[in-house]
Image (tube, rainbow, N blue to C red; front, side):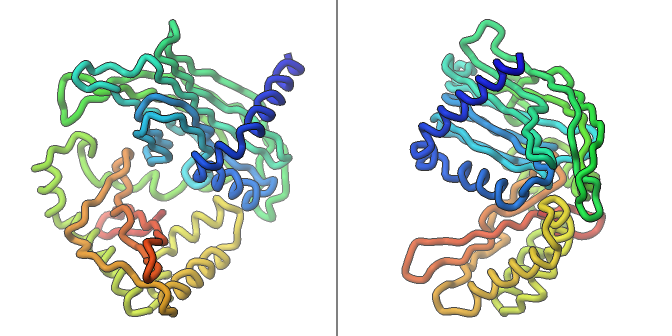
Length: 350
């Protein structure tokens, strides 16, 4: 059996190698993700999600955070790193696909996807932890596979590799319908898989943060969204963004970077990099964009922009709000800033 698996993996690697140039053109995001994985993680434990499929609008969440989405209904393949989103204990992988034709509420007969959770251990070995596989034309359509075993994880201080027996438990994949704004007809389906596993990381603060809203954000009507938008809590979110933008406009870089303290603290553990290295890197980038005449900070009326709330209802952000434009060209450099609600204030966490 091991020889057969090894042969299958060899054939898979050869097939991927043969279409590498084509994949690079269609999926530069995936290529960058794999390069980052190799360079930044070295041989320290790395969790990642391998995603491929075709002919279906799709969204993928890990612990309620948006990891990937594609609505073009074209073939897709990418690899997403998860270290800063997974935790020791229960983790949820949710794949959501939408109907191809909303008038009939049916998915395309050609729709398929495979979402695989893997672990690169401290010895450089790759382990498959779980999979969700779906094909609309298959007899059973859906399958979820479980892989149990032992993995070598980093021990912590000094990152000395230590063998740690860690059985990974994967619950049977559950399927639930997706409705829009509390409607009755399904416009798609959720495929939900619970994975219980160990990690060498502390529990990320956003996972236990207070819910921003009481109902699923996906269900909000236009009127309900506008009411939420005018609430004191969301107005405070806009004020937090405005504070960040004003600091960048005033070139008060140290104060702007200071708003990212929680992100530096957690990313340093997730990426195995010194905390100050991440802080200094962001400082250098912000100074690069604010100290020269080559770039300009794109200014917008923040309060007129629409915010988004993650599936877990614990993270909110305004997509693309921090943008530096190359003067004279249509080139933009974006910086993400995601916030969690901490009882009475917003904290930049991702």
